[in-house]
Image 1: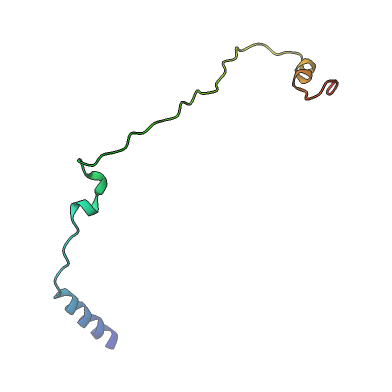
Image 2: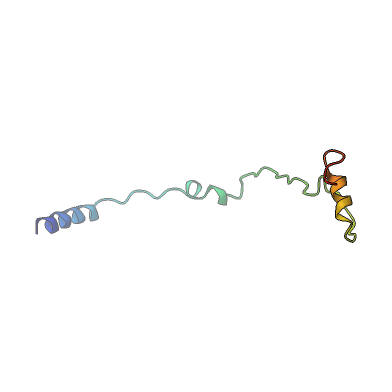
Length: 76
């Protein structure tokens, strides 16, 4: 009963208080300003370093291993 009475008094007192001023539009949504300047963006070229290679049929796997081996004589 005491808790209900205490909460009722607090609610009644807060209902009688003045409401605070609302924030301005500039502080709420600065990104929505039309007069704001945005920096230019640059995107990197995604095809830098790309080497076109034609499609060809399968090759002998031993020849491929010899070509990719770090030292002569390995993989034979």
